[in-house]
Figure 1 (tube, rainbow, N blue to C red):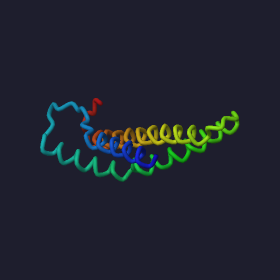
Figure 2: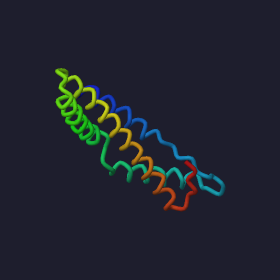
Figure 3: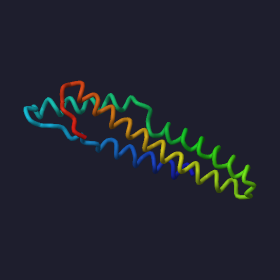
Figure 4: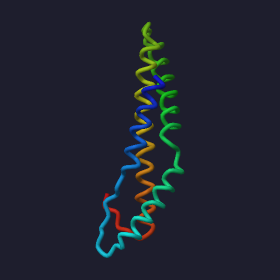
Length: 117
């Protein structure tokens, strides 16, 4: 379980680093943009990381899945708990990566760039 959460967090972290916002490049100094993008990515790294989000999502997912399986009376509570823990970890990692992309976009917009995506 921990291995799967680690893999999910690593994949999301790599996806977040690869984020290249689409901006209107008309009148943009490419050197200045590269520096601003690097600074904005550094700000985004201060947001809660995928690792913490994966752990929180896994814990919440396990508790919900295990509890639901208990209420439904199934004897496979641990299996259901592990599945929902993985689902929770993946969804929280995706949310953390999306938040980092949003931070980069807002930062660039604040610096006067017209962010298209």
